[in-house]
Length: 148
Ligand SMILES: [Cu+2]
Image (cartoon, rainbow, N blue to C red):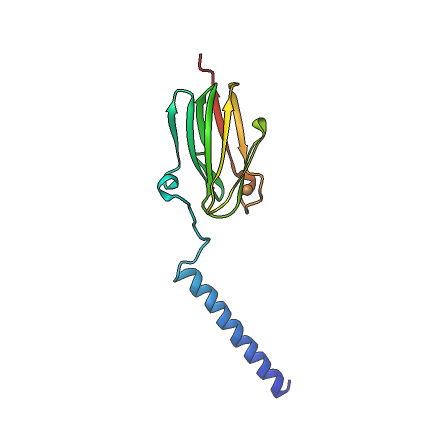
């Protein structure tokens, strides 16, 4: 091994050490993580279901790795939901197959739709946008009860 090879190896090792130190320093001491970006924080700070009247609901839902909040919504049949959806971290999907609902939960943005549930039953919600290691477990449900 000649002098130049040793210099190149030392330089490479030094640069690698600086690079690894920078990553570890930023990850731990500066607490850099996936950014959180919730719009209209007053509304989405606490995801909730707001009952407007007996048959009208507003749902302010937040998707995050790897669930929805709220992940279960119970309403009587004949109800209409105004759904406002956002994401805490990355892009998620929001798919209710039985209702043909197909939304994206985008950090920093709000997706909105209106859905009417006339038939009682359980409507499954699944994430249909790959969002990481727990994606396949990301689901929720809307339980529509028979109002009679
Ligand atoms: Cu997903």
